[in-house]
Amino acid sequence: MKKRVACLLVLSMILGLSGCKSKTEETTKETEVPTSTETSATETEPSESETETETTVSEETSTTWETFETEPPYNGTALDVYPLLEDPSEPKGLGNVSFKRNLKNLDIETSAVSDWFKETGWDYNRMEMICESLRIKTSGYEKLNDELDAIFAPLEEKAKTQYSEEKEICLKQLAEKKGDYYERLKDWKDLLHIGVETKVLRADDYIVSFMTEETWREHSELIKGYNYRSKDATPITFDDVVKDRAALCSYYLTVFDYDNLYDDFKESADEILGQIMDGTVAFGLSYEGICLPNCSEWSAPVHLSAMKHPEIFDLSYFGNTPKYYMILMQEDTVFWDVTGDGQADVLSFDIEREEGCSWVETISVTINGKKSADIDLKDTMVWYDDAYLARTDTGIYLIINLSDEYNGVYIEVYKIKDDLTLEKVSSDSGFFTESISAEGNTYDPSDILIYDPSNGGPIGSSPYYNFYTMIGENGGFKAKDDLYRKTAYLVTQEEFSCTIIKKDGTVVKDFKVPVGTAVREIGFSKKDLYAKLETLETDESESYIISLPVQKCEERDYAWYNLEQPYHHGLFEGVTIYG
Image 1 (cartoon, rainbow, N blue to C red):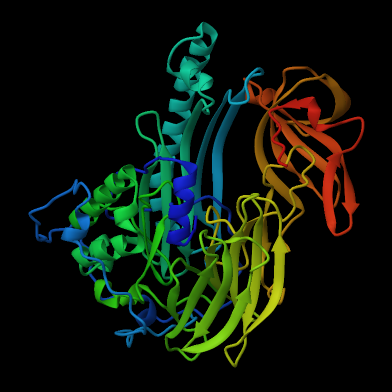
Image 2: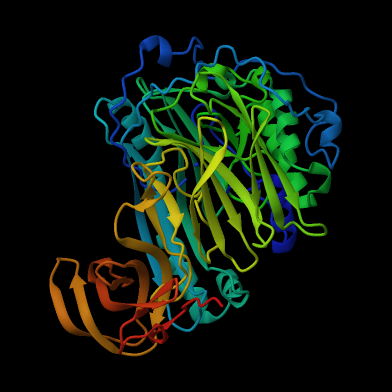
């Protein structure tokens, strides 16, 4: 997620109250995200001097830190303990940051052990288990893969065991119409979700960093962070990166309007401040800063720039990147090498909003004190969400995510020219709740998760997504394959005949799918015009793939997709229709 904090707070007031409490058990290697990333990089291998740091990793932190008279919970007084930091207007103390593009992205794979279950009768009568794991496919990183296996193998086993046990309890309570699970069903809440979501923050031949969000029956939203030196799989500790814990607490509060947070969010923030001070906070590393748990209801981590407050951090972990990269602009100003001369430039936004509401009227972009563009949005009625800098084979681009009150999203792309002015090169709009998604990779422009800019899916209108590349596209986005994905749990309401594919690959035509069959939508192909679903049988070996024909419909500049007659989305219970 992924939002500028002011907008985040406005949205959180609208959406309701829910605090995110993060407890972390491991400090020597930890942090989050879901996605599969494949990168074939040919950049020059960095020298040992460029990739090794002088910091010696200790197995356990032994530093004693100052204990303040006021300890968490602060009960709304955190600002008395950690005063806000002044927002710098120009980079200082970045003389040792080289901004070299000499790293090499690793070829990684994220896979998932999963299971789903849904019965007819209730839209929310569904259970799922998804445990995402990470492996390095690039050769020469066996030690790192051993570490990853040691992390994810126990998690996969725990997820499978716990899901099986809870599913049995859940089905029993639903049959008896009593118990906690039955009450959740009556409250229109998802019955059961167990597993691990994994977010990769960077994966190159210097550092591999990712964060996980674990959901168990005994604890939900358990955030952990994992950070390694890639070559020898040595853990990077919190104290390796952070030189001033109290100042980091102040920086964390500076990102949020702490005084105006809901009490639940303040309590969560207080807990995270306590974890920062005792060194147990989950953290991850990007090219430009550190990622920490979010105290609001948004699950994406909070990104704090090491370039804006270099006095807090060991800068040897930041600045260098692969040849092509992306960085998140979660604040209005970023200090980064935009011109390519190896020195930090200042890129800032001045967002003018409509009086009395948060609609954006104008975004004024300034680079090194020079006005680059005034982006006029007066007639669009949109919010500013966040922005990215992306360097590709054709230059460096500013990507802006916007959204409207109808769940529409807009991705606008501007090329930063040599004279530091902006040239608009792309604008994609649609009707979904996300655009470039923080759930996916946000560090590699060759593998970006984007929700499809069209709400016209063949089975309902919930977001479909795909993985895109910007390489070779002159600022545009090209889908990496033709499968537009969506995970939706449905139940057949009518019997129908179709082509199916069994687990052994056998194709059966005119197969009768019975009423009450639970299915999971996988996605659809715009090229080959078919929709793909998987049945959710109790015995997984009995599950099969359903293939249904799709037709494309067009009107003016708008295109959508329907199931081809005699099929229609009314065959399924649980379909989401917007508008």
